[in-house]
Image 1 (cartoon, one colour):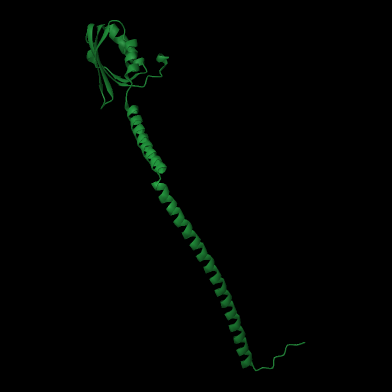
Image 2 (spheres, rainbow, N blue to C red; image 1 turned 120 degrees about the vertical axis):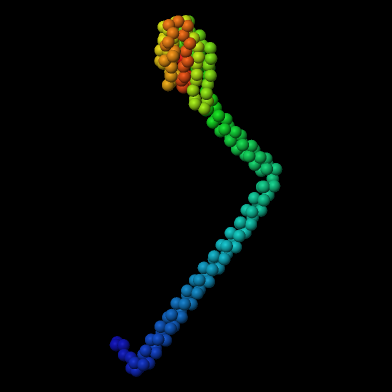
Length: 187
């Protein structure tokens, strides 16, 4: 069967426009239908979330006023203060020079005939000044050599005036202390 249309072209166009309008109208109705369903779904989700948020806020308020929570908060505050204090103490301890190994090393390397009269530390320069006297220049040179080989001391400065006398040598040494806790001599 063939499709014959005996209507004039003007009527055909009106029919096509009407069909397009009906199609567009049904499309708009479907979109509005889905939009309304989406809005209803979205509003129910927002309503449920607001109820959950309100109940959580109430629970938080109840827990804040609870004695156990307040006690735990106090403990957390005290713990954080204690941790800060421990960090400060640790930093201060790193700055401290442990004098016992240094003094032990000095007593080990000081030969007979060498006497130490003054031991001072200048913190601003991180420098030790050592004064003393030796019976002979040989004792002084032996002590100077041992001081230079020791792992506890570095950057040893000795003025030439230390070598002027043959006997009764007054000497001065300036040097930097080193960490000699784990040196080979202390084992």
